[in-house]
Amino acid sequence: MTMTTREEIIKALSEVRHPGRNDRTIVELGLVQDIDIKDGSVSVTLAFSKRRDPLSEYIIGSTRAALIRNLPSDVRSEVKTVVVDEVKEKKKPNVNDLGVEQLKDVRNIIGVASGKGGVGKSTVAVNLACALARLGYKVGLADADVYGPSIPTMTATEGVSPMAEEQDGKELILPIEKYGVKWMSIGYFAEKGQALIWRGPMACNALKQMILQVKWGELDFLLVDMPPGTGDIHISLLQDIPVDGAIVVTTPQKVALADVEKGVNMFRNPGVDKPILGLVENMAWFTPEAHPDEKYYIFGQDGGAQMASSLGIELLGRIPLVQGLRESGDAGEPAALSSRPDGVAFIELAGRLAKKLGL
Ligand SMILES: Nc1ncnc2c1ncn2[C@@H]1O[C@H](COP(=O)(O)OP(=O)(O)OP(=O)(O)O)[C@@H](O)[C@H]1O
Ligand SMILES: [Mg+2]
Image (cartoon, rainbow, N blue to C red; front, top):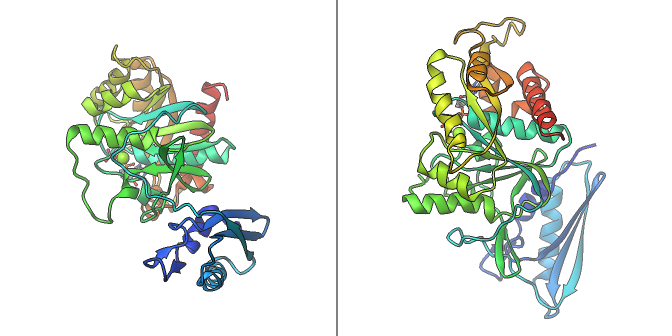
């Protein structure tokens, strides 16, 4: 039986436009009151106000058609309607309006950092999130890289627009759910291909908003994919977000030690003072796709273990360098969802992290 996600249904419903309301979608107009997914069937409830909408029959028909067009053929779908006093339009979130603490039901907030760029932080963060979800934990991931957000690409969620919801007079952004993980990224608020140019304080605000103004709900883990480096923006983030601990990602070369040390010291900085949960050695060896049993230590062997012991932290995981991992990242289908060796390496990492935190 085919599994259908809420996100797929919302995407299908976003094709239905109201010709009498500037062609806006029924999702934007707040007409979608409820989505119910039960084994093999989907039920969507549309809300119409008491004042009869002459186009309601047209909208119901278009909604039915959109569901049939977009859902797999073995999924049954129906459209119900309710009459309400007033249909509340869903507002698009206002990105310039800092909100309240939304983290009270989040058990562990973990920063994924590195001393330098390009070592695979985002790859590790995305796959660790999917691996934790596969182990049954409730997981969210906030993309804190406001200059170069990569989560939308790595999860094939580019172009989706998160909705906002009002709670106690505050506007909250709803995360995007896919692969069993809740994702949030500033990339969802930018036009495709548009460079994100921020002045310092704006970047900091946008970043905090990606974490504090999101309706995360109950989570076992909220991973924060940190931007590269160890500058002011990092320190400011770590002071304002109640991060419980950090994972530092590195490659195995001896010359990477100085960068890892910078990353570790950022968390050990007296103004920050958060525990380092461990080191992840990425690209620990190279394995050719055609010879999965072979390991070539092209950046040196045991570099990660040596770095971890010299910094007094645990080596939590070792991830191989394989072409498929890069390809999965580019295709937005995280390797951790597969049972390939690189996927298994992330499951092992997730298991060790959960155990370390007593979960
Ligand atoms: N173990 C690996 N095997 C193959 N490719 C990898 C591996 N780890 C990362 N990559 C690839 O290397 C590139 C950089 O990885 P990624 O974007 O995760 O790094 P990053 O540290 O988040 O970078 P930035 O500092 O720019 O945020 C990506 O194309 C990714 O797919
Ligand atoms: Mg990154």
